[in-house]
Amino acid sequence: MWFVKIQGADPQTGDKIDEYNCAMSWQPILMVENSGQLRGVAVSVQSLRNETIKRQDVALGLVANAKVIRN
Image (cartoon, rainbow, N blue to C red):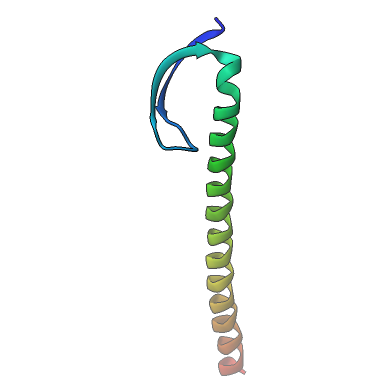
């Protein structure tokens, strides 16, 4: 149960990994990988936020112009 096989790439060096080892010895590598994935998600969320704000500003501008034209 504590002896697991990991396949993939080392997040620090990029070297391919395909080996069995104790689950506890994989923990530092997996934590680094998890941190990298979380940074990627944070960047994506920030990008989505910025795009949403831009489009919301455009929509609010259109609504404001429509009110001016109607009055």
